[in-house]
Length: 85
Image (cartoon, rainbow, N blue to C red; front, side):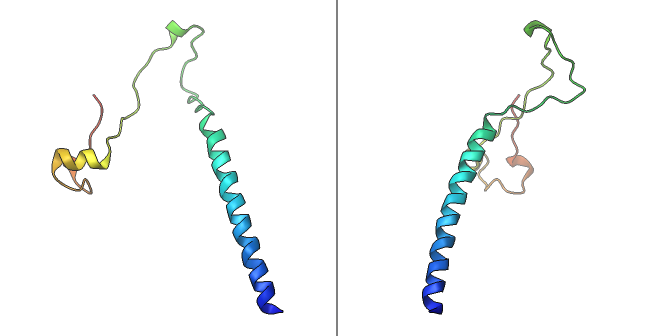
């Protein structure tokens, strides 16, 4: 009886882990559609022209491109960092 119960529990765990993974993917999809809230210090412009762009985020370069450009693995190296102008 214990072997059958163990098998049943294992199947239940696998099914629930699959469901959890599907729900997590769905949650991540929903969350990716929610924009970030601006910091409270950001002034609110009433029209698009009143919104002043101070800076943009950093564009990241892929590890493969870093290796090709620097000749190293891109790990723990000052020459491996790259920021957009």
